[in-house]
Length: 364
Image 1 (cartoon, one colour):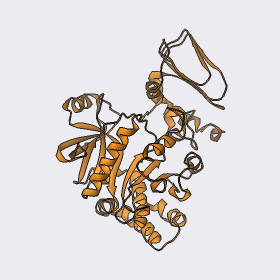
Image 2: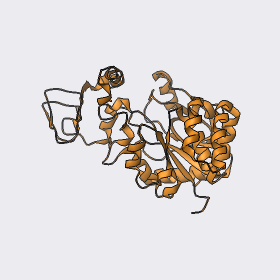
Image 3: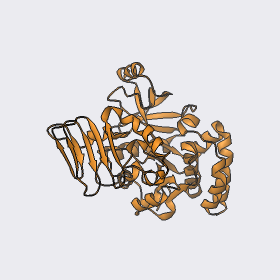
Image 4: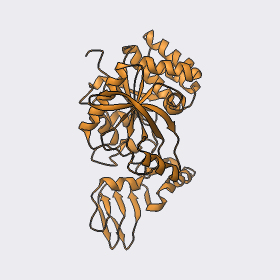
């Protein structure tokens, strides 16, 4: 294995509360086959396997999800699955990844990818990722992969592009003018119309020195904690004990806010692949073939005189919907959800109430 192979870091710590009751604390969205036949995390690993060897793929997860993650990532080396003792947001996870990769390869280039996105066009995805790796190797830049918006979504942050920075493998890469927070609908419509804005999908590519320089400059508190991890690894010490000690003290801040929004060396590569972050149950419907009445189902289900329903059943339990429209019905072994599609965002609030039940742990 030569050192110049890039690395992949998959962040798999999300709770996936909007997918309750299928999604649970120890088995969140990324560990479920929400779309397709294998867990979303498995799909993410398989998508990058053609371009990097298994021992260059890392997964950073939480202590609660470690067991589940190990089960669905059996093809990766055991030591490449790293469980944070507690979640400290994405800047800490990225800094940890830089420390681990830097101990192997001080100039290593790595991608940071979310675990739970749905992408069908693997070849285009691999081609874009390769171009991003070339960009990050060629100059001290932070590369973000921008998704061309197909609607004025208000649930994503946006990235505005400036002038062309370089053309790599016939793909234009632009300087980033600015990052903007989630906009309101009127602003989002302007962004989409302008053609110069992309969705920020949380996919980044950079080298260890670029990340560590930015953390030292813009998040010195975080850097001080990470320095203890880097020192321990340089001395050949085990990672788990030092993480247990250092992690609770780390600053809790997102990588976008800590580094990207403050840096002037960010470039954006527009994606050519399809992309969906399937943020809630209604988004799932886009990936299944509906019946003649527009119902989408998975498992043992039956809809009689109803349209536009999403019906999921685990195991061999038959779920039947009669004379109802636009419902989400999800049946699992010990919890069932019935919810109008237009109230899907309220599922998170319901989960908070479930958490206050006397025997809540059984249902979360």
